[in-house]
Amino acid sequence: DAGVTQSPTHLIKTRGQQVTLRCSPISGHKSVSWYQQVLGQGPQFIFQYYEKEERGRGNFPDRFSARQFPNYSSELNVNALLLGDSALYLCASSTGQGETQYFGPGTRLLVL
Amino acid sequence: AQSVSQHNHHVILSEAASLELGCNYSYGGTVNLFWYVQYPGQHLQLLLKYFSGDPLVKGIKGFEAEFIKSKFSFNLRKPSVQWSDTAEYFCAVLDTGRRALTFGSGTRLQVQP
Image 1 (cartoon, chains in turn yellow, cyan):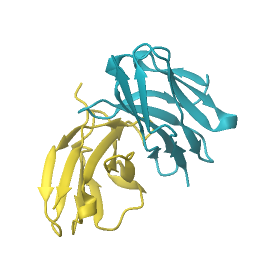
Image 2: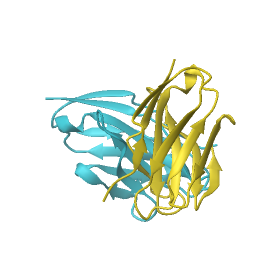
Image 3: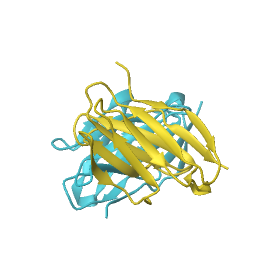
Image 4: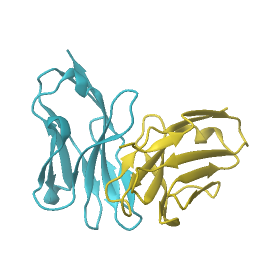
């Protein structure tokens, strides 16, 4: 079975730009969560979506937004990029509302 | 707010040595605990998890962890490490309200042949 997939794998943007990251969950999984992993730290929770509704939000500014589609795939949007947004963005999927989460390979975002 | 502490930031062992990585958590609700591993160039993989029942849980690749409620700990162990265990290890607790994982800062394990 295919695991969680994310696109693109790498991305370079400049300050002030906007970025959209995409995630496809494991087949049959209805929940998607997004995390930010800065170098040398553990992942930090951004959002959780279940059945197309936001069910949890971490301590991130409103520049961060997400949505989940009817096929359970998800997009993470970040507006007005800052240098500090440079990180690995991880998507995780689970069957229900987050019990055991399986992670994708991540999208590495570099903001110049 | 919940938190997870991993006290060992960088551990260097020789092959066949025993491993124990510390993890302490702070969380007032029902505890669901996880260890994830991130091998060089690979994505986070689930090693093992504890939801309830036997506090000694066994995972993949010979790893095990013990949940000690009185100590708020969930330490990871392996009797004999291999060079292929070189990786970063993350302990995490599930916030059942937000359905969010809170991770520790990770322990980088380097196994020397």
